[in-house]
Length: 208
Image (cartoon, rainbow, N blue to C red):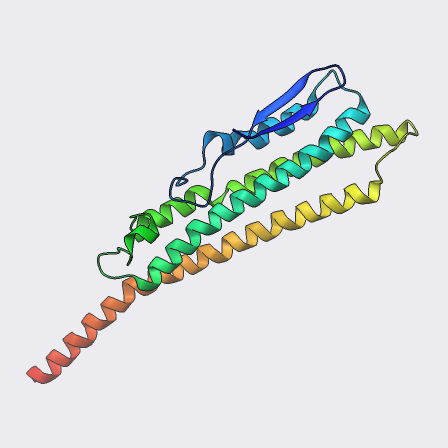
């Protein structure tokens, strides 16, 4: 299993197992590693045996790893979302997809459930990224206070701004997706109802 590793100056090794989840049928729900790895990475930034420069260096490496985890989680979320959308476009009364193997032998409802199990994962990792940036910012501020700042504040400010933008964008995309789902469900309910009403109207007219 892949690991995120960081060697501290006192010889302590931080080694955190990374998730094996992927864009495939085996990843219907986030693994415990996917749920916990980003939390453990942020928690390790508080290692008490480290100096300020070490913590700052750790934050730089950890930040890149968390971004990679966020990208992976977003890809898996989009994988299930696209499968559910493709299936819905083909949808029939039985709610099974054509070419079942392509859809992991799952119904549209099951695909939708897989999507929802992943829906919030990127946002949770983004929250961890934001928490790590707070640690990084506090550490850099302390170094600057000591007159030994090694990382430009402008660089960190830019990263924080980008993270906040991603958090807002992810929330917006989730909201748009929810509205689309509600609209689709409404159409699925009312389309058959309208057909029945039309048939009843025609039957009534012919009966008259």
